[in-house]
Structures are given as C-alpha cells and as structure tokens.
Image (cartoon, rainbow, N blue to C red; front, side, top):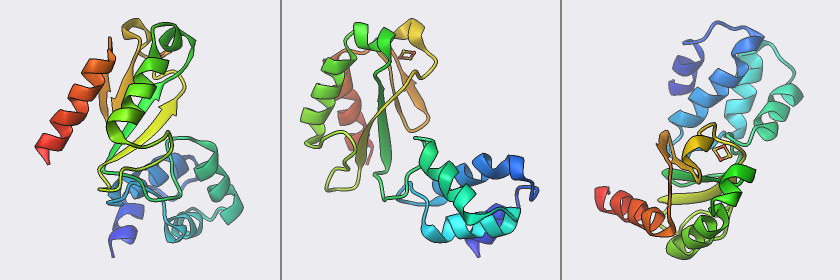
Amino acid sequence: MERIRILKKFEPKRENLLLLLHALQKNNRQNYLMEEDLKSAAQYLSLPPSLVHGAATFYSMYSLKPRGQYIVRICQSPPCHQMGSSDLIEEASRALGVEVGETTPDGLFTLETSECLGICGVAPAMTVNEEVHGNLTPERVRAIFSEKRRAK
Ligand code: FES
C-alpha cells in the first residue's frame, strides 16, 4: 500500500516526523494529511498520536483539510508587507475568487499567507508549491495564475 511504501523510506526515528508528514502530504492529490496518515505516522514512529497531531497543526505547511493542486502562499512579514504584499493578497483573492484559507471550486488553487519565506531581498514574495516568486506586482501575480491555468 502506498502509505506504507512512503513510511518505509524513513528510518522509524522521532526526528523524521516532520519529513515523513511532508512526504505523506505531498503524496495526497489534495495536498493534505488525512487522519489515517497521522495514525500511521504515530504507529510507525512509536509516538503518541497527540504529539503527531500537535506537529501537524502547529506548522502552517501542513493542512488537515483538502487543498488545491497549487498552494499559493504570500508572505506577510514586515519586509514584504512594506513592499506591498497586502495589495498582492487582495489581487490574489480577487483573481481566484476566494478568501485567504480557501480553495477555488475547481480545486486548482488554495490561497494562504505565510511568515517570512526567507527571500526578503526580493520582497514582496510568494511561493506556488515549491516555486518561488519575488519582486511581485499585482499584475505579475495575476499572470502567474493564468500561466498555471493554461498549463492545466
Ligand atoms: S519578509 Fe517576506 S520573504 Fe522575508
């Protein structure tokens, strides 16, 4: 079974918990961790289920509810904020027709905000899954979404 195959890629050590959760989430077509994923991770690492659940809810990179194929995360930490990230969030929300935390009805995009993405030199910044985009304008954000839609 797929879940077991993923678990077995990791040594059953506590310090592998975050990587393991990441791999399980990445394997899910809707980009989230199912209850069964958390249970399996706890069992495999011999950890209390509450600890695994706590990690999955503490870190914003994990989700316990279904998300879109593309996770859009716009940085709202001070350097990006000063460079206009609020305008980007507004434009993204308008372009996608969803509020922050929501997924488009076609299941393509989930809009999220994030703390510093570690690329303040190119603020304002956002990520789309693993892709990093900097020096953004509202127009560029809209164009990126159109490119993704066309690529479908
Ligand atoms: S503050 Fe936005 S990337 Fe660092």
